Length: 273
Image 1 (cartoon, one colour):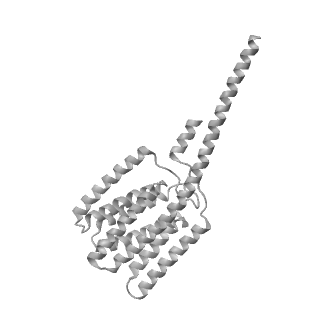
Image 2 (cartoon, helix red, strand yellow):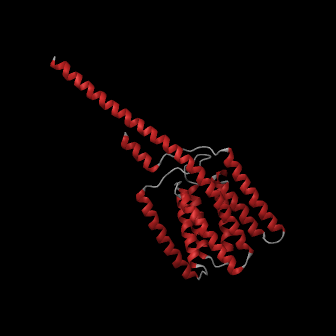
Image 3 (tube, helix red, strand yellow):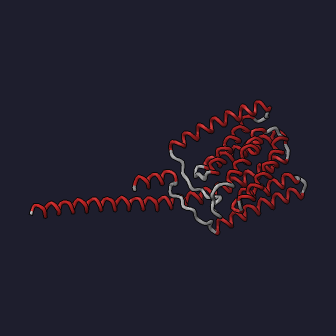
Protein backbone atom coordinates (compact mmCIF):
# COMPACT_ATOMS: atom_id res chain seq x y z
CA UNK A 1 0.00 0.00 0.00
CA UNK A 2 2.80 2.43 0.86
CA UNK A 3 4.61 1.55 -2.37
CA UNK A 4 1.48 2.28 -4.41
CA UNK A 5 1.05 5.59 -2.59
CA UNK A 6 4.65 6.62 -3.27
CA UNK A 7 4.20 5.78 -6.96
CA UNK A 8 1.09 7.96 -7.06
CA UNK A 9 2.96 10.75 -5.33
CA UNK A 10 5.89 10.67 -7.77
CA UNK A 11 3.73 11.30 -10.82
CA UNK A 12 0.78 13.21 -9.38
CA UNK A 13 2.58 15.05 -6.64
CA UNK A 14 -0.29 16.26 -4.52
CA UNK A 15 -2.06 18.51 -7.02
CA UNK A 16 -5.84 18.32 -6.82
CA UNK A 17 -8.02 20.09 -9.36
CA UNK A 18 -9.81 23.10 -7.91
CA UNK A 19 -12.12 25.67 -9.36
CA UNK A 20 -10.66 29.07 -10.18
CA UNK A 21 -11.11 31.63 -7.42
CA UNK A 22 -13.14 34.77 -8.02
CA UNK A 23 -10.00 36.90 -7.63
CA UNK A 24 -8.22 34.88 -10.31
CA UNK A 25 -11.20 35.21 -12.67
CA UNK A 26 -11.29 38.97 -12.04
CA UNK A 27 -7.55 39.20 -12.75
CA UNK A 28 -8.00 37.51 -16.14
CA UNK A 29 -10.82 39.86 -17.11
CA UNK A 30 -8.82 42.93 -16.03
CA UNK A 31 -5.70 41.82 -17.89
CA UNK A 32 -7.65 41.20 -21.07
CA UNK A 33 -9.52 44.52 -20.74
CA UNK A 34 -6.36 46.58 -20.23
CA UNK A 35 -4.44 45.03 -23.14
CA UNK A 36 -7.49 45.16 -25.41
CA UNK A 37 -8.01 48.84 -24.59
CA UNK A 38 -4.35 49.61 -25.36
CA UNK A 39 -4.50 47.65 -28.64
CA UNK A 40 -7.74 49.36 -29.66
CA UNK A 41 -6.29 52.81 -28.92
CA UNK A 42 -3.11 52.09 -30.92
CA UNK A 43 -5.26 50.86 -33.81
CA UNK A 44 -7.44 53.98 -33.62
CA UNK A 45 -4.37 56.26 -33.95
CA UNK A 46 -3.08 54.15 -36.89
CA UNK A 47 -0.07 52.60 -35.12
CA UNK A 48 -1.50 49.07 -35.33
CA UNK A 49 -3.22 47.50 -38.32
CA UNK A 50 -5.94 44.88 -38.37
CA UNK A 51 -3.42 42.02 -38.20
CA UNK A 52 -1.77 43.37 -35.05
CA UNK A 53 -5.15 44.03 -33.38
CA UNK A 54 -6.43 40.57 -34.30
CA UNK A 55 -3.23 38.93 -33.05
CA UNK A 56 -3.53 40.61 -29.66
CA UNK A 57 -7.25 39.94 -29.22
CA UNK A 58 -7.26 36.31 -30.39
CA UNK A 59 -3.92 35.63 -28.72
CA UNK A 60 -5.18 36.86 -25.36
CA UNK A 61 -8.44 34.92 -25.58
CA UNK A 62 -6.57 31.75 -26.59
CA UNK A 63 -4.18 31.90 -23.64
CA UNK A 64 -6.18 33.56 -20.89
CA UNK A 65 -9.57 31.97 -21.53
CA UNK A 66 -8.51 28.51 -22.70
CA UNK A 67 -11.27 27.01 -20.55
CA UNK A 68 -13.80 28.11 -23.18
CA UNK A 69 -13.58 24.65 -24.75
CA UNK A 70 -11.31 22.39 -26.75
CA UNK A 71 -12.73 23.17 -30.19
CA UNK A 72 -12.73 26.92 -29.61
CA UNK A 73 -9.16 26.75 -28.29
CA UNK A 74 -8.06 24.83 -31.37
CA UNK A 75 -9.70 27.37 -33.71
CA UNK A 76 -8.04 30.23 -31.82
CA UNK A 77 -4.70 28.40 -32.00
CA UNK A 78 -4.94 28.13 -35.79
CA UNK A 79 -5.90 31.80 -36.18
CA UNK A 80 -3.16 33.08 -33.85
CA UNK A 81 -0.51 30.79 -35.37
CA UNK A 82 -1.30 32.00 -38.88
CA UNK A 83 -1.33 35.68 -37.88
CA UNK A 84 1.91 35.27 -35.93
CA UNK A 85 3.54 33.40 -38.82
CA UNK A 86 2.71 36.27 -41.20
CA UNK A 87 4.43 38.77 -38.90
CA UNK A 88 7.43 36.46 -38.28
CA UNK A 89 8.00 35.84 -42.00
CA UNK A 90 8.04 39.59 -42.66
CA UNK A 91 10.97 39.91 -40.21
CA UNK A 92 12.81 36.67 -41.16
CA UNK A 93 12.10 35.05 -37.78
CA UNK A 94 11.70 31.55 -39.16
CA UNK A 95 12.16 29.23 -36.16
CA UNK A 96 9.13 30.84 -34.49
CA UNK A 97 7.14 30.31 -37.70
CA UNK A 98 8.09 26.63 -37.61
CA UNK A 99 7.09 26.01 -34.00
CA UNK A 100 3.75 27.82 -34.26
CA UNK A 101 2.65 26.07 -37.46
CA UNK A 102 4.35 22.68 -37.04
CA UNK A 103 4.21 22.38 -33.23
CA UNK A 104 1.51 24.50 -31.63
CA UNK A 105 -1.29 23.53 -34.02
CA UNK A 106 -0.62 19.75 -33.78
CA UNK A 107 -0.24 19.96 -29.99
CA UNK A 108 -3.51 21.86 -29.69
CA UNK A 109 -5.15 19.21 -31.86
CA UNK A 110 -3.77 16.50 -29.56
CA UNK A 111 -5.12 18.44 -26.58
CA UNK A 112 -8.63 18.13 -28.02
CA UNK A 113 -8.33 14.33 -27.66
CA UNK A 114 -7.26 14.51 -24.01
CA UNK A 115 -9.76 13.36 -21.43
CA UNK A 116 -9.99 16.72 -19.67
CA UNK A 117 -13.16 17.35 -17.73
CA UNK A 118 -14.98 20.66 -18.15
CA UNK A 119 -13.08 23.39 -16.38
CA UNK A 120 -9.93 21.30 -16.00
CA UNK A 121 -8.40 22.14 -19.37
CA UNK A 122 -5.97 24.71 -17.99
CA UNK A 123 -5.14 22.97 -14.72
CA UNK A 124 -1.67 21.67 -13.92
CA UNK A 125 -1.77 18.24 -12.34
CA UNK A 126 1.61 16.46 -12.53
CA UNK A 127 5.12 16.92 -11.24
CA UNK A 128 8.19 15.72 -13.17
CA UNK A 129 10.50 13.21 -11.48
CA UNK A 130 14.24 13.99 -11.17
CA UNK A 131 15.14 11.50 -13.91
CA UNK A 132 12.75 13.11 -16.38
CA UNK A 133 14.08 16.59 -15.52
CA UNK A 134 17.51 15.55 -16.82
CA UNK A 135 15.88 14.09 -19.94
CA UNK A 136 13.92 17.31 -20.49
CA UNK A 137 17.08 19.43 -20.32
CA UNK A 138 18.72 17.18 -22.92
CA UNK A 139 15.66 17.49 -25.16
CA UNK A 140 15.80 21.28 -24.83
CA UNK A 141 19.50 21.39 -25.79
CA UNK A 142 18.80 19.17 -28.81
CA UNK A 143 15.89 21.37 -29.87
CA UNK A 144 18.01 24.49 -29.51
CA UNK A 145 20.68 23.06 -31.80
CA UNK A 146 18.04 21.96 -34.34
CA UNK A 147 16.47 25.45 -34.34
CA UNK A 148 19.88 27.07 -34.87
CA UNK A 149 20.50 24.75 -37.81
CA UNK A 150 17.03 25.55 -39.22
CA UNK A 151 17.61 29.30 -38.89
CA UNK A 152 20.97 29.02 -40.66
CA UNK A 153 19.37 27.09 -43.52
CA UNK A 154 16.47 29.55 -43.89
CA UNK A 155 18.58 32.69 -43.52
CA UNK A 156 17.06 34.04 -40.32
CA UNK A 157 18.47 37.39 -39.20
CA UNK A 158 18.21 36.64 -35.47
CA UNK A 159 19.53 33.10 -35.16
CA UNK A 160 20.38 32.80 -31.45
CA UNK A 161 17.38 34.72 -30.09
CA UNK A 162 15.00 33.05 -32.54
CA UNK A 163 16.31 29.53 -31.79
CA UNK A 164 16.30 30.10 -28.02
CA UNK A 165 12.77 31.49 -28.03
CA UNK A 166 11.45 28.70 -30.26
CA UNK A 167 13.06 25.81 -28.35
CA UNK A 168 11.85 27.12 -24.97
CA UNK A 169 8.35 27.66 -26.34
CA UNK A 170 8.24 24.09 -27.68
CA UNK A 171 9.30 22.60 -24.34
CA UNK A 172 6.78 24.69 -22.43
CA UNK A 173 4.00 23.75 -24.89
CA UNK A 174 4.68 20.01 -24.49
CA UNK A 175 4.75 20.33 -20.69
CA UNK A 176 1.54 22.37 -20.82
CA UNK A 177 -0.19 19.74 -22.93
CA UNK A 178 0.68 17.05 -20.40
CA UNK A 179 -0.19 19.37 -17.48
CA UNK A 180 3.22 19.28 -15.78
CA UNK A 181 3.87 21.89 -13.11
CA UNK A 182 7.35 22.58 -14.57
CA UNK A 183 5.56 24.11 -17.56
CA UNK A 184 5.64 27.43 -15.74
CA UNK A 185 9.44 27.39 -15.37
CA UNK A 186 10.03 26.86 -19.08
CA UNK A 187 7.17 29.16 -20.02
CA UNK A 188 8.46 32.14 -18.06
CA UNK A 189 11.97 31.78 -19.53
CA UNK A 190 10.43 31.26 -22.99
CA UNK A 191 8.46 34.50 -22.70
CA UNK A 192 11.52 36.44 -21.52
CA UNK A 193 13.52 35.10 -24.49
CA UNK A 194 10.65 35.95 -26.85
CA UNK A 195 10.34 39.52 -25.56
CA UNK A 196 14.10 39.98 -25.98
CA UNK A 197 13.88 38.59 -29.52
CA UNK A 198 11.21 41.08 -30.54
CA UNK A 199 12.97 43.98 -28.85
CA UNK A 200 15.96 43.18 -31.08
CA UNK A 201 13.62 42.94 -34.09
CA UNK A 202 12.09 46.32 -33.18
CA UNK A 203 15.53 47.89 -32.84
CA UNK A 204 16.52 46.49 -36.24
CA UNK A 205 13.37 47.30 -38.25
CA UNK A 206 11.49 49.89 -36.19
CA UNK A 207 8.22 48.29 -37.31
CA UNK A 208 5.12 48.63 -35.13
CA UNK A 209 4.18 44.96 -35.67
CA UNK A 210 7.06 44.07 -33.36
CA UNK A 211 5.49 46.27 -30.67
CA UNK A 212 2.26 44.26 -30.91
CA UNK A 213 4.15 41.00 -30.40
CA UNK A 214 6.06 42.47 -27.45
CA UNK A 215 2.79 43.57 -25.83
CA UNK A 216 1.33 40.09 -26.43
CA UNK A 217 4.28 38.28 -24.85
CA UNK A 218 4.42 40.73 -21.93
CA UNK A 219 0.72 40.08 -21.23
CA UNK A 220 1.44 36.34 -21.37
CA UNK A 221 4.30 36.87 -18.92
CA UNK A 222 2.08 38.70 -16.41
CA UNK A 223 -0.63 36.07 -16.79
CA UNK A 224 1.72 33.11 -16.33
CA UNK A 225 3.54 34.63 -13.35
CA UNK A 226 0.22 35.14 -11.55
CA UNK A 227 -0.94 31.66 -12.61
CA UNK A 228 2.33 30.16 -11.38
CA UNK A 229 1.91 31.77 -7.96
CA UNK A 230 -1.72 30.61 -7.79
CA UNK A 231 -0.84 27.05 -8.80
CA UNK A 232 2.20 27.00 -6.49
CA UNK A 233 0.09 27.90 -3.47
CA UNK A 234 -2.45 25.22 -4.34
CA UNK A 235 0.31 22.71 -5.06
CA UNK A 236 2.05 23.29 -1.73
CA UNK A 237 -1.16 23.11 0.27
CA UNK A 238 -2.32 19.91 -1.38
CA UNK A 239 1.15 18.41 -1.12
CA UNK A 240 1.06 18.99 2.63
CA UNK A 241 -2.33 17.27 2.78
CA UNK A 242 -0.92 14.28 0.93
CA UNK A 243 2.09 14.17 3.27
CA UNK A 244 -0.24 14.21 6.26
CA UNK A 245 -2.25 11.33 4.79
CA UNK A 246 0.94 9.40 4.11
CA UNK A 247 2.11 9.94 7.69
CA UNK A 248 -1.23 8.67 9.00
CA UNK A 249 -0.84 5.54 6.85
CA UNK A 250 2.66 4.96 8.24
CA UNK A 251 1.46 5.52 11.81
CA UNK A 252 -1.45 3.14 11.37
CA UNK A 253 0.78 0.44 9.91
CA UNK A 254 3.20 0.85 12.80
CA UNK A 255 0.34 0.58 15.31
CA UNK A 256 -0.98 -2.54 13.57
CA UNK A 257 2.49 -4.08 13.61
CA UNK A 258 2.89 -3.40 17.36
CA UNK A 259 -0.57 -4.79 18.09
CA UNK A 260 0.31 -7.94 16.15
CA UNK A 261 3.54 -8.38 18.12
CA UNK A 262 1.65 -7.78 21.39
CA UNK A 263 -0.98 -10.35 20.38
CA UNK A 264 1.72 -12.90 19.52
CA UNK A 265 3.42 -12.36 22.90
CA UNK A 266 0.13 -12.83 24.75
CA UNK A 267 -0.58 -15.94 22.68
CA UNK A 268 2.82 -17.42 23.60
CA UNK A 269 2.25 -16.65 27.28
CA UNK A 270 -1.15 -18.37 27.16
CA UNK A 271 0.37 -21.42 25.43
CA UNK A 272 3.08 -21.74 28.12
CA UNK A 273 0.43 -21.76 30.82
